[in-house]
Image (tube, rainbow, N blue to C red; front, side):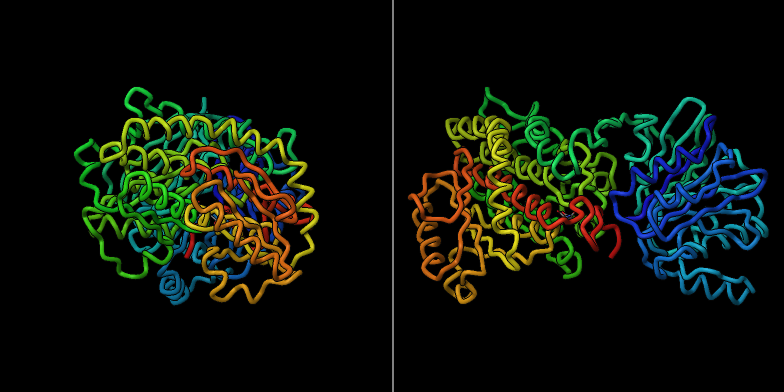
Length: 608
Ligand code: AGP
């Protein structure tokens, strides 16, 4: 969703800001804007279009060493040029870019209007620009002081970046619930809402905490809390570098990320497989064997694909550790006054670490004394920081809206957790060794699946004309079916519905005819024969079937077959997921969709 960039230092700010905004495009946005200080004035350029349009509009003659930029996802007011950020105060001294939502915006806007201020946009952010200017006028002090006094009147979430044309040697930033990261350079500093915007320039970063404010100058920064306590921050080195954000030889990020899965999986397993004791090592969860044994239940919380990964995790944990486990959408959990059990281990799952619903679920859990771990990809993100401990997914930057490699690493992490919880209980060393071997085999097996891309693309081409599809799985493969249907819907806009194989005859079988293809998941496990009979039932009603299997199916049973290697049955679901990503990708490609940026969706959902 919205993105923030800022620069102060020795180079020309404009190209740095535009490049930073370009890097944030993947998050989804509807308008963009930029403000730099030039000859004692703020020079503002905005567009209700793309960053390229902004690039075309800026005046190349403007040379400046300090500025701010923004990509906006409309919340208050429609996506047009006036509502695009930056927003200025009445005199044009202060420019503000803002991510998040100011909940008392209406009240603040009304107060400003009563005081005679003419608000030109419909946004909550514009109110902040006027309020900061007012605080400077009436209360004096530094820009930082005025920002702090303003924020003490504000309810809501913000990542905020402010510039004052009268003090072009500093930027002021603040954070509450919406990420802000500072990039440390040589006689220059960068500000962003996402490290993607600054890794090209530096890998040394400082993440602000909620309630923290910083004044950033070319030669450094200082931080404090809103109530004026100085804080000290340790810089962190970002794992990713600029190359991780490049497309390279790929036509889009989703295909690139699908093909990065073997390497991403090797990273998430590195150092976490313990052959000597046939178990897994997850240092970040910070639980000793006694504490692990006292876990009575595991509950996974996430949204969208992260929720489906949680469902895969619940099946794994229950099966491997014999600990009751389930998954629930964090977006529902946060609204239903959940009973929080101190003996349950809650796992908050998120690629971005910014999904508001998941963050709110974590905060609710913490308020009620629940023990919550994060399973998060982005280090330094809000959910990772709120949880304080957990499992980093090490999938590398995921740019495409459709999650692929992060989901695979989520499922693999939950397999590690299942082994760890299992081995402090009744799982034998032999069983532990079987799973450790199975996990180690996964990256190579995924490479074998990726090598079948041409075949999967051909099958996708054969079925790309369908308006609706079923995804059928049972038990271990049921979350895989849900995730497969989600991928198809998301990027191809073909309606897809996942069903448990066992439930077909209780209703949805009525929908089966020649126009309703079904993707049926047939792992080579104890339910293999049952799944074959599911295919026969569909075929008997004239329904086309694409079977995805790790077993040997009778010849001519299905209309198309995608084979995956056989691992241990508990881990087969991870392998079955990969062809479904490729099938969705090639269906969307065949239909000419904008695969990386599907309509109406954003990469991280940071608003309600
Ligand atoms: C996945 O393909 C989707 N884009 C979406 O469901 C996503 O998984 C969900 O919004 C959660 O995102 P998160 O993992 O960043 O929290």
